[in-house]
Length: 140
Length: 140
Length: 140
Picture (cartoon, each protein chain N blue to C red):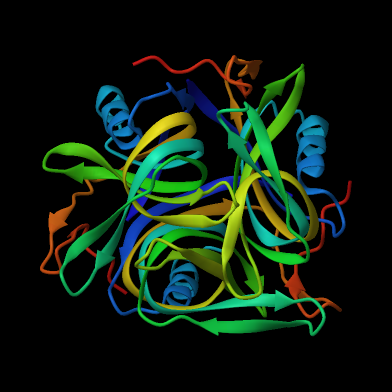
């Protein structure tokens, strides 16, 4: 859907916060109902998910140690009446190898974040048959 | 070049569409001549390319199965008189390992996309000696 | 912090330039004091860093050859009185495997860049006890 630009925020999340919870709380406090999120930094002990189409569930991988947050791309929309960030990450280990997927959890060592609020109709995630909660798809 | 902001779009591509073809069609339908594209989601059987300087051609890798679309970064400009998206992707397998490069093809399982239209002079890709189609470079 | 949108730039960096130095010079020439940077393209012989919490220093990895610049995410703020880009990259080798981290250096073969200037209070990097130069963290 067509949206217009709202407020923009550039900030650093304090150390030891959980990334997703912080962004969801930030969106709630600032009333950001639709938006985009990007970030770089360093995360500790991130949990990432791979969505398995067959089972309709995420396979969870727990990485241990500190990882460069090489890319973080996400969006904010409404689920169960509250703003929810859906986030994917690429994470670099000490050998420079990259790991990633759906961000389930990640403790912030450093996170420099850009949030762009978007203004438009409510965009809501609704449960689908495939096990995911998705927006209505855009027609052709 | 300096550009100004046009329309913004946040949407989900329907399942089974080919990602690049959908974005090119979207740009054409909505007359987006310059822009940026980002997305997260899940792609099936993506084909990615690595540009080989020596041969001046892309080496094509066909991945099979379903991959997390961990990052997708692209731009829209004009090639051969029509809007064309140039897209790079990072893709996560079921073990969380990342693969990626130039997106040649990818079937959408889920794709949540943000397109930012930019307004300015026509930005056109022209064939170069090295085998790529590029914009004029920005001088110093 | 809340920021507003300034100018936007979409451009290609000339071949053989060093990516970070070019962006820092671009920011200085155009007086971009706060901003975001994204790019795709191809880099030669990139050097990437992994920040080691224990030593408080970056472990530097020198990759040789040509890599797809799969994602590049960065921000611009002030350090030592001048605009400085902080950049993380994901890089694809000829087998499609991804490597990445903090971008220390990278020679441009192709770089298509989007810079978004942001307007607001000065955002400054200051040395921290952990060895990094960071902005003040956003409170809860």
